[in-house]
Length: 79
Image (cartoon, rainbow, N blue to C red; front, side, top):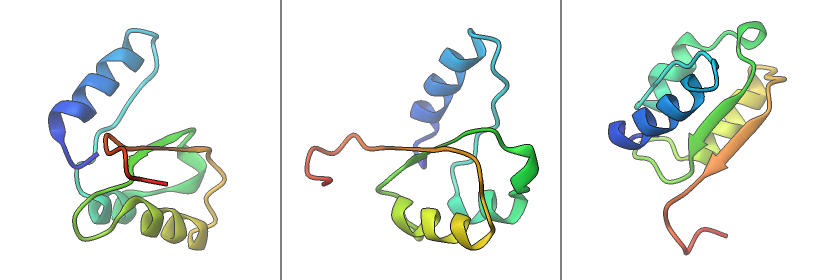
């Protein structure tokens, strides 16, 4: 998520369940650090600057991602 407060809230909820998290607010930075075999689940916003969530999904597919991806949005107009 490009919004740090939202990302931190989600991270905190997951950590309370003993799930390790790593926050990226920049999708390009995430892609530069992405290692397919070490990621078990990816949670992404759909509307982000520079690279939106759909483009991020396409980039992850090009990198042979096998991890499940959860796409989220706070906007009601996202199909």
